View 1 (tube, rainbow, N blue to C red):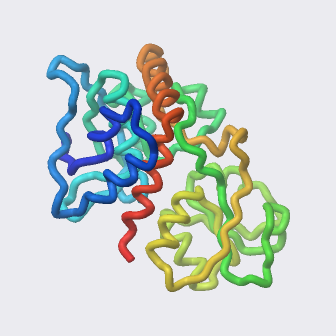
View 2: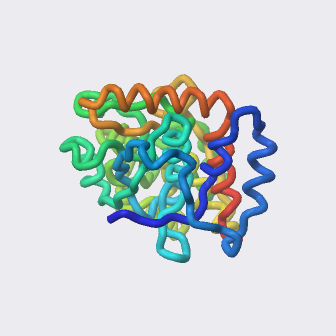
Length: 274
């Protein structure tokens, strides 16, 4: 279903040419829940509309606000790309599996949901250039474990998210006792309950969770560099729509150069309820 959304960073992104990151941060910091307005695109009514599949309940990328509307950094990011390249976006909530299928069948034009680059996906989908460096990260509680990289996980109980790139990478490891969770938060809970020794997820997912739960002291270790393709967060596009993929890539390049995506992500981390 089509949704109405509260104001997002796009309103600044439209006029962001010539603005720096500090300006962006100051503008966003003035917004409160009470001050928010309904988002209105700056594009003309004749602008094309793209259908974007999203997953609810996946903070900080896409989740519902107190009014039941979708919000999050991926919502902001794809709006920013659209405003930059001249197309509007309508959001459609899908399950994780339906999200991919909806793009494959053409029901939706593209998808954003904290999607990490996977070479296997390129066989069926068009993947944009990465708009965010979101490396796989190990989180643990017990300092005596002193985990520095994947090799230190041997012999330990490790939690991962079902269907994630981390789960696929560790699935055949005989040296790790792997536990698969349905959601990132369930994986985090298993760590807090000492059901696992460590968990692995995307960095921004773990950062968001730890900011929401400052009562727990944890250690986080990221192990993918900027040039590691798997650490890149991408927009999933229908493979037949090469023109749209090209437009998305242009928008990604322009906004990335101005530091917009980093500021969007930082804003959403700052919005965590203390």
